[in-house]
Image (cartoon, rainbow, N blue to C red):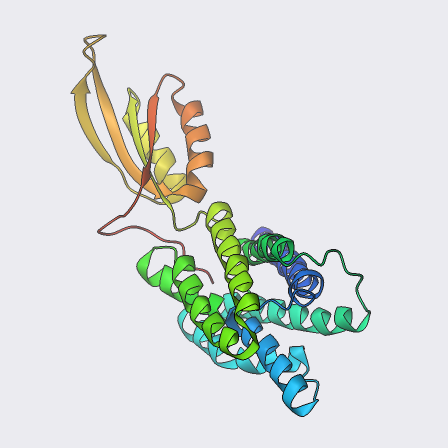
Length: 292
């Protein structure tokens, strides 16, 4: 019963995060992206580009929600097969909510906040990143190219958001040919801002090396194993200042785990000396928690 209640609580939290992320994504499209005629990249950008083309060439309104749902069918299947069923379910919920509210809010005639394209590009990129990060914290995605980014990151253990930024710039190249280079270049600012904020806020694929000098190496290792499921290597050394022998515990964890782990290690051994190092790359076996 306790396990079922814990699972329900976790799923409720994930559901709240994807609902909030989906709503913020729709708000961003309506108040920043569309008024400035920006193209956010990915399937959202392709959908807006198609809407623009159909309106200009055929005088037809292409529904945003139905179009973006159709584009996400194949990525959703890939996510279901290679990433996780629950991950894909919550991602689909996010896609549905963002598409639905984009059409609903567009029909309400949302008031114009600013007509400055640069402000729309910067703050739209920030709001887009917040929406995406909420979905990532819920162990889901905002759909489209995010499915691809998560798949690559899970396979390689490295953040793929800069790679997706490059792919989106390619899309914006074609948008520039169709809708004008001014809008396309501002859209690249939007994409760059969004990618950098995501990298700043979401640390799952960043690695932290901990060098811990302690006299309680066994307790320290048990704490590392319990909280992160990562291993450690223990070295013996002598402190030249004190002349005493100590143990050096070496481990690598994700940046998302390091804060909680460092706090707990201080409880286990208040006298431990901990050196925290940003790790650029890791080669070899490294435990990763896969989304379900």
